[in-house]
Amino acid sequence: MLSKKKSQNTVDIEQHELLERAQKRVRQKKKLFSHFVMFLIGSVLLLLANKILKYGEVYDWSVWAILFWAFLLILHVFNVFVTHKFLGKDWERMQREKLVQKQKQRISEIQKEIETDFPISNVNKKKDQ
Image (cartoon, rainbow, N blue to C red; front, side):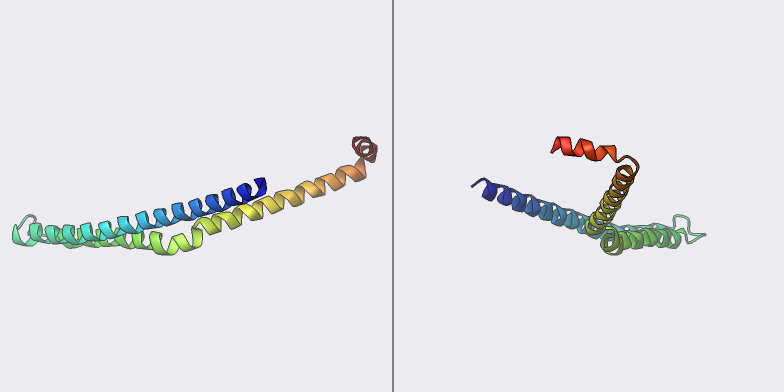
């Protein structure tokens, strides 16, 4: 009965983590969409200010402002769709597992060195058992 609760808790935790990841992705995509809408509205307003209201008419500054903003939007898209796939939670988990494996391997190497350098420790192991 206790083992069922433990396995059920791990399933609940896994489902909770999956739900949190999904919510985070939805928030990222929602922010990207709102950034895109703000870009469209802002671009129109910048063009209106520059061309129709003739604010800074001598120089087409609105085009450069829109290009800069478009560059930032492209970076945002890249971050949400490309970087997330390569550097997301799965990548973090794999890196963590690799580091833990390296640490375990190093610990076992050190233990072997200690056992070969200090054979007296075998006597202590027999006493503990």
